Image (cartoon, rainbow, N blue to C red; front, top):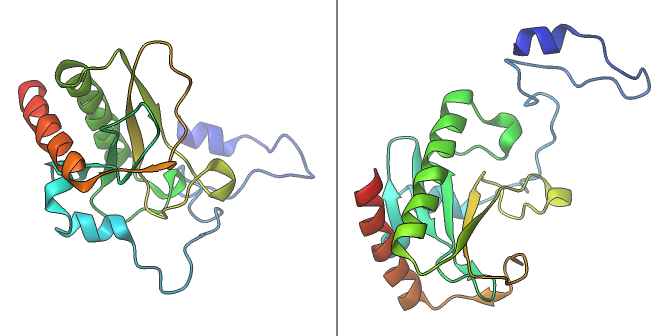
Length: 176
């Protein structure tokens, strides 16, 4: 399917389709990582902040976010263990593992947290709201009729983050 899509002519000669490599935009999409970038999620994948890591598998890991929106405590981030800056560079097999884990985390939150629903969000590039240059998917517990989440407004308490990591880990054990 991707080969068929890539073989079609661009819709506009003023804005031609970007070059495709394995169906990805990796050769076209600019990097936004500053020189010497020290990726915090690579550090977590390497074992930093174990108290906040709720789950770890070969290709993905889940940790409790450092910043929460008001009304959304326990927000989790699903990340690939290998550094991919954004969705454009992500191999299909890793994308599938992330999607599987997002579904499991959402299910575990509904079972293990007191919440009424889940918001899933994944941002790419500065204009798309990305501010950490390692792909990650937000899984946010939601309550009743509260407004949509706003990310990064409130610094979460580390002890509370660790409690949510334990709670989510236990709940994931029931659904994985």
